[in-house]
Length: 489
Image (cartoon, rainbow, N blue to C red):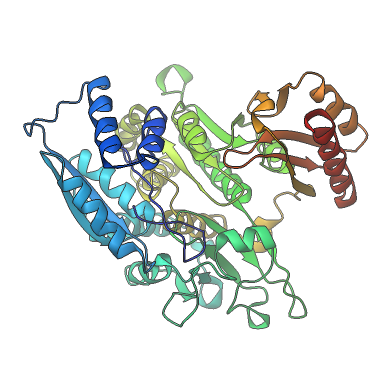
């Protein structure tokens, strides 16, 4: 996939989907780095030959490989895709297939579908999403069905690929009215004052939104449509928003799935039922109030190091694993064994019974979510279906819990590798003594929490702090930043 996601329009890059449809396996990352930094064509060729030997990859033309190529709407995408095509076609036995302009999650979905032997065109993607959404909407209890403006959603398309693609999907939906703004056709610039990354970080309205949208349900996609956040414009007098971020999306999904499982297992003897393990996966950056809320529901919550690859891997260990980052990237994974049992159970249950409806809802959710990677479209449709099933407004959803005030800082250091962390980056084990010093600061603040971690890309140490007041979070973050400077120079 040729995209630079939420970065500015002049940037571009590449995202690689594994045969599973997921992200590039971590074991191949050093090889990808070495390729990208090869000094010249001879070094490049040598790297490929050595790696093929090490991985026992035979390049003799007998083994066929197909590589699907997609790009977003950046002007540089066309020539980069052409370069990728030439590179792929230079390898004996491999063929490049240009899938055209796509969202990143569409390409991941297509790879996964092809390798499962099912139809995998863009039309098939839209069909699967819209039919699963219709299925969930037909099961909305009669008293919850909404009409008029209540079923209208206003979406900021980040002036990227997502806006136009969402318009294609809209034509296949019933029971939901979507108005797309910043679709890239009106002269707006990709990710400039628009998009999920901007909305989540700045907490202000994106361009083309304002006083006319007070109280409306609004959502924002990022540049390649793999992230989603919701927001409310609370008053006409300010640009500030009430953000409904990835943590709140996760909480809504977890609440709904737990409720459906409860209905499904009602009256069933434990020995006769498949005991589905439901797990929620977050990083240390998840707001502490969301973690407390999820644990309060009786859910198993685990933390992983920062990065979607860690979250996805952990979520796959459960029968139903839900993961999200606060930035709006996440999805739900269902194990094959649970889905197999669920299909069987669905066929045994009396038609129209509450248990059978719960089984149908869970099966529809498993088809609606993109199990390859976070997908703003499938996330958006699932949020909309759940809000209608629960008969909730966006305000009710937003008030599930109140976020603890937080602050993030960066401290420039000579050597970021001097900080080594453990326990999903919540504890600094090196340099010696720094964690004890952080703990001593943290206990001074009600509901205080703070951690440090080295950046993955630059020589900085990232500091996160939260407390019961914004002033407390700010002061704690500054105190911890000073400790980093003292210990690391």
